[in-house]
Length: 93
Image 1 (tube, helix red, strand yellow):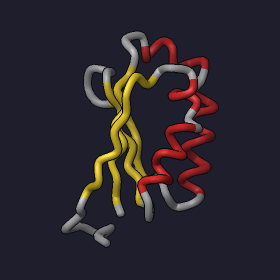
Image 2: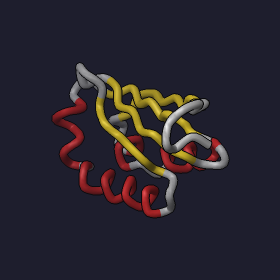
Image 3: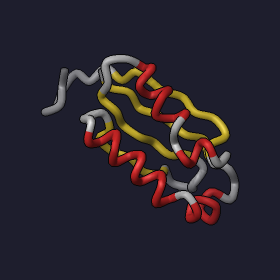
Image 4: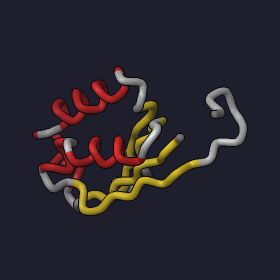
């Protein structure tokens, strides 16, 4: 199943992330190596970020968040994983 993970970010996110960025990228790359993570980036304005996953269970998303250096450092104020029903495209289920 596809999920879009949306992070709500602290006001000073762009400055604060630098101390944790390398660790965050390592965390993301580990998820990518398992075949779970596909795409990620910030939305215009720097207040939200989106990460696209393909996993069997939302618990995998929860585990990702709970071990994400950005979340652990308090850069993420809130998060939501939205189930995305892909109906067309090369990665359709």
